[in-house]
Figure 1 (cartoon, rainbow, N blue to C red):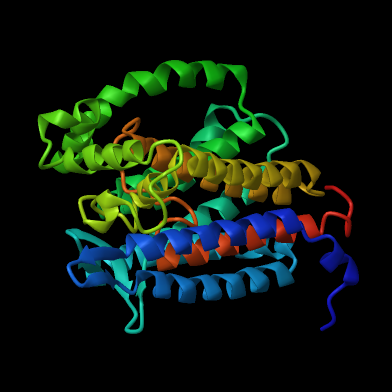
Figure 2: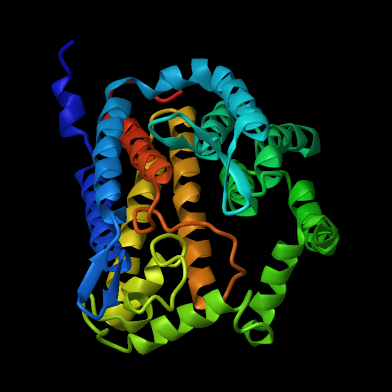
Length: 370
């Protein structure tokens, strides 16, 4: 079926270009993070090669997502929601345990993480529900929308994967704020949320409590739970203004920095490229998010606008939490940095979500606003 020429002309090329540039920077950084110094030279782990394969698959998925009219997602919102719940339940019975957490389904040729699909599901179902709400949300409708999101977040938190479960709640919370709530709900939330935070302590696992205590003072356990944050801060600080240079970071190449290819990948980048390189990376992320803001404002229907807003908050919270985590400004919760951290499922989801936003942008002139 031929593609309307107007769709090609309406592609938001800056957003597409920024996504590709960020991925390439992440892959180059992963090449360095995958290596470690030996007496005879450098040894490389195959993470960056796998990332290239996942990136190619992600670009293919992005193109497929761009081809269909995003408004058809309304019809699959609830089926996708229930399918995701079934897959999350399957993790408890047939899931694969890695590093003490049961989060993956072994498909033979790959490990699939249903919690990544949950991010897409919460975006679509949230956009569908909110697009039908013509007034700011009151207490009853707010409870309904949040309840739908918590049905997905609950099983993920029990895996345990507090970071991903929390990100689902934050994504949906951002979409709700974008839609608007009544003044009574807003005032109540300002009082209730801070008041309930101490109660959350009772439901945390021991390792999660240690992470919070370590966040407050990493030196209390410098060789245990505080090791990640201390080594990350050393790596970032040692980069100085200009950085040590590509493949020259001591903390990463000498393997002092843990999880340097996943959660702490940006610490590797900061050490090698310094303050200047880090500012360039953050500027690229800001431009990337700014394009989504413009697309959300220009969307020609409410469903497309809420979809774009949801994707914006998906990336915004991950960028904020991961960078805050490696700087020691937030507890370590295991949230990767989009396009920079290694991850097959997350890379595929990232590109597909970019494709979804491009889909909304491409079709903004094809039909009237509803």
